[in-house]
Image (cartoon, rainbow, N blue to C red; front, side):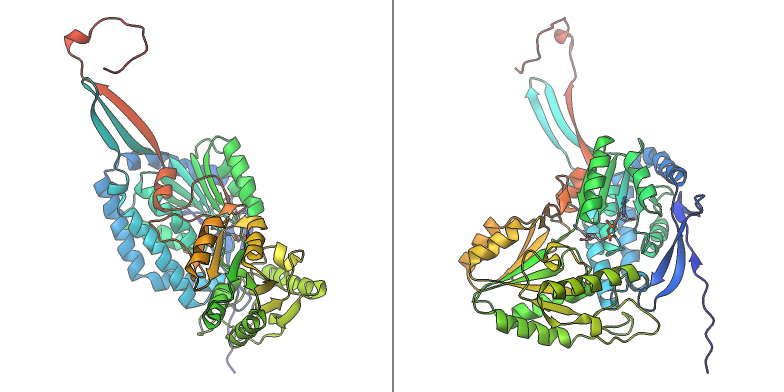
Length: 504
Ligand code: NAD
């Protein structure tokens, strides 16, 4: 018999000024391995005083980093890119161990984050301003972009590496210093990336990690030393973050939750649509803000589509993400209870349960947080499985007769993050692209996450603020414009004139 000694949970810390820092709050949260249910680490939850110290470190590092040349900054960015590329597997392992998503998915998340690092390597080009010679006689005008100061980044549990990387490469390359507040459920990736920055040569204090919960968030939202806040998480918290940070005079972008619809028109390739509904509905156990959670079947295809999705979903292997499963566990036991509660509610509300994940078998040791792929048919818009963001592997099929009904359904939903349409009809797809009130649209593409050089963001309750993440929106968010008007006078310009300056 093999006797395994339990490994004591690792004691985690904050990261400030290039070194691990213990908090003084005396509050901690457990970090679990969702596939086994074991507690693997204890993360400190910062007090306001802990947060103030980390913010002060970032504040102190700002003047020198702002003045570092673009050549120096981008050299460090390139070094970070090379290290991240070489050691992506290490980061993927950390993500799987804390979040539960399968290793291939974790590696995919790192790859998408890496794309933003690569985009930020082009900062010398992106920061170029404009200049006009002789705007008025002997007067030149130039527009330049300057960094803001300390930037707070508050991220959700579901992308421990990619979501922070939507923001910090651009913020840092533009000359800001950063305090990252990762989700307390998955702090490992942020701390690992902090060490990588140090290895890449980033000066101490430019990238800092503040672990914690609402208390740490509130400290970032209200500190006079934080100039801007980028938030990603659920809609109620996004709304709160936007309001509070705005009241405290900060620039803020707050990305919220989602309920993403896939509209399948009668002419669509149903096998393709079924494949993609399964990929986009059950990938990462549905814990993606761009997951498809509602399939809208238009016309008489619904029976065939539901059967095709159920066949594929039934064949998925659920289990420990390190063992080659297709789908991993949910992030916590609370998330598991929440998702199974929604499945109970859907059944009680009268939706047809075509596949029940509560009874699924899974491949893992211990007591992990597993629920299998779940498919509901005949879902109506008053059911909680439709109105709420479940954030689990639960796909709902709604049946409508026409394109107009499908469009109306999507547009009436309060969320507007992503959507997709499946069709061979270019005219219908073009109408949908034009008429749908959603920020990111896929045409025969189920998870239309924009490339790093475009910007990521939803509409309606999926985003508060007006700038999206990364791309040119990201560069604009982390810089402010200064316009400089210059004249080098000669003696003929002397003399007092109180009139409003006119151009000549
Ligand atoms: P969450 O809102 O619970 O937490 C997000 C962050 O806010 C965490 O760092 C957390 O510590 C902090 N937080 C939690 N409650 C808070 C409170 N009351 N006051 C202040 N801060 C608080 O979200 P989550 O469960 O970690 O992530 C899942 C959610 O994020 C889903 O709704 C998902 O759709 C959304 N999400 C959105 C996008 C997007 O791009 N729109 C991307 C990823 C995730």
